[in-house]
Amino acid sequence: GDQFPFYGTTQAGVTTPAQDRLFFATFDVTASATRDDLIELLQDWSYAASRLTQGLDVSERGAVGGSPLLPPDDTGDALGLPASGLTITFGVGPSLFQDANGNDRFGIADRKPAALADLPAFAFDLLSPSMTGGDLCIQACADDPQVAVHAVRNLSRIAFGRAQIRWSQLGFGRTSSTSSAQQTPRNLFGFKDGTANVMSEEKDALAKHIYVDSTSDQGWMNGGTYLVARKILMTIESWDRARLEEQENIIGRDKGEGAPLSGGSEFTEPNFEAVHSAGGPAIPVDSHVRLAHPKLNDGIRLLRRGYNYVDGNNDLGQLNAGLFFISFQNDPEHFVRIQKNLKMDTLNEYIRHVGSAVFAIPPGTSPGGYVGEGLFA
Ligand code: HEM
Image 1: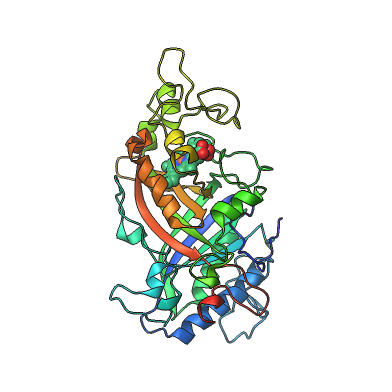
Image 2: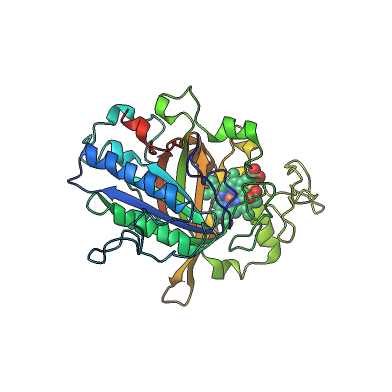
């Protein structure tokens, strides 16, 4: 299987070709934890992640190499499995810098980037507190769900007494391409998703829209980015009863090819001036693709890296299904700008945002260092 290095100037899991599976978890740092506890946790996490991403146990003793009188260091459920393209991406949330009571628990308030603020409330939000926020996050992506779950399970075990999981989400079937070498996958509405994404080959666009540079207010974020997570419920049973023509008008692209309704093929640039043969715009003014397009959003682009999810079913026999939307951008305000513009989106009839979080994703680190070290330097 694929193997991606943990160490580097930027963290893996952003421009890495999107893997098939996701296990995302947010953590709250324990009330009694000190600044030193937090530093040690981040050090322990980075060391373990550098091993896990090579397909190794969390420590040298691992699952079966330790004393028979002690619980093993590693839980063992990934023994014999390859790295499976595992990437582990760590993030820090606004509440790490200032808790609900306004306290700077770890003496890092002066390191808080101005851009790292809780997201505002949006039209149609139906957020559940049990799927919102968190002091820290781990995004584990892999081509094997067992490998992604093993990683988060062991990292949360390492955190014992220092931080615990607040909420988590399993995802499958990447809903975005992040490399032009990848085929565009489909979301649970059956549409190609990721066509107009920022791809890893677009170096200029990555520098302009995705990565923080040396001009930001916090030097330690140079080479970092921001992650916005939105758990979006999709009422797929209602969608499946909508006419094909309506589905295509809502998205603004055709279902088969993913081509814009103004014509051409999948990667043809949409033409919002094009007129439909029956009159009116070929791409409806309230379609998702038009309202999310850079032309209507000051040229802003996001790197989308979401996954489908199905969390069982409800009492009506409908699936609890949707899109676990993840986007990376060098300012969360860019997400806010687009999400506000989507207020008129006809897609809103079939979706509800039920979970939300925002994290600063620090730059990468090198052997001996740890992700987030710039916060304490
Ligand atoms: C494009 C689906 C939520 C931002 C698209 C496309 C589809 C789609 C099918 C067209 C193909 C592509 O370029 O990827 C969905 C579904 C959503 C959802 C089903 C919810 C369940 C969001 C949210 C945002 C967003 C919350 C950001 C606030 C974008 C952007 C594009 C896009 C920026 C590219 C537009 C362009 O440049 O042409 N989405 N989307 N989407 N979506 Fe979404």
